[in-house]
Length: 162
Image (cartoon, rainbow, N blue to C red; front, side, top):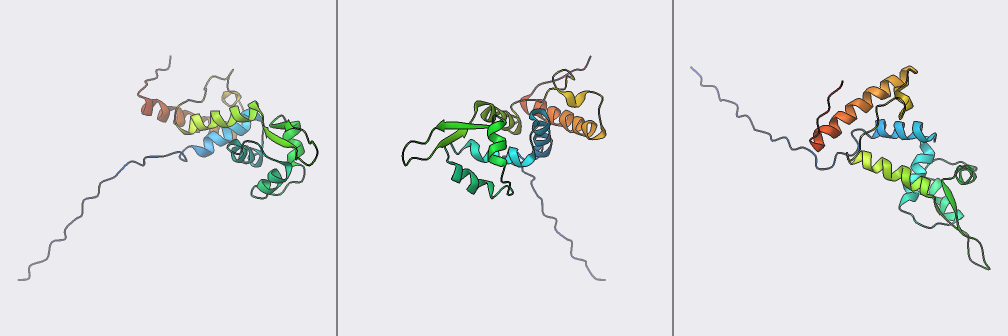
């Protein structure tokens, strides 16, 4: 009679990731795009410019190569109130531009949500996604509810519906 070797099982320990920013990135990105009526490429450009500080038109053009080439992007973002001139041209100096307060607030708000510091409003008067709308809004609303539950769980808050 043969004796079978018993297979030894390895025990694995599941560790929760320390930084889990990207889990709800799509939900938050779509919410920010809808709320502020901007396109994805403009939002990505704002995220890039957020840490840039002052920049020239040529630096903007260089950065816009990463986000898809659009000749009118600079003018569109300037007219939309996302960037403004910080210093006009004098002599051989370049004009300098920076993000407006509006642009910085959008990215700061997005980071707060990615860090699970803030919930997204579920009230229809504050968030038009929760009004009776199209199918994509209903799907996004489900994602927002799941995100808010995750925020409450991480922050130790409880929520009761009335």
